[in-house]
Length: 97
Image (cartoon, rainbow, N blue to C red; front, side, top):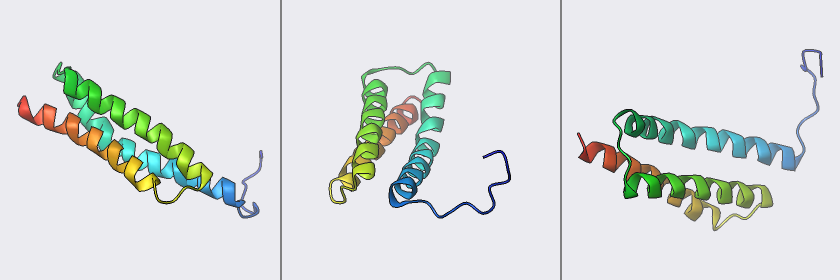
C-alpha cells in the first residue's frame, strides 16, 4: 500500500457498500455540523438541540448498520429521522435569532 495505488482491483460488494456509507455520513454531517456549531457559538443548548443532536447521532449509527447489512426499506426512514434531528437544531437556532 506504499505505492500510488493506481491499479487496485475493484472493491468487493461489502467494501463498496462501506465506502458509500462513509460518503453518505459525510454528506449528512455537512448538513448537521454548521447548525450545531452555530448553536454552540451562540450558547444555545436546550431540550430541542440535545434531542436533535441525539436523534441525528443515533439514527446515523443505525443507518450505517442497516446500510452495511443491506436492509433497503427501513434505511430511508432512519435517514429521515437523522434529517429531522438536523432540522430540530436548525429551527432552534433560527428561533433564537
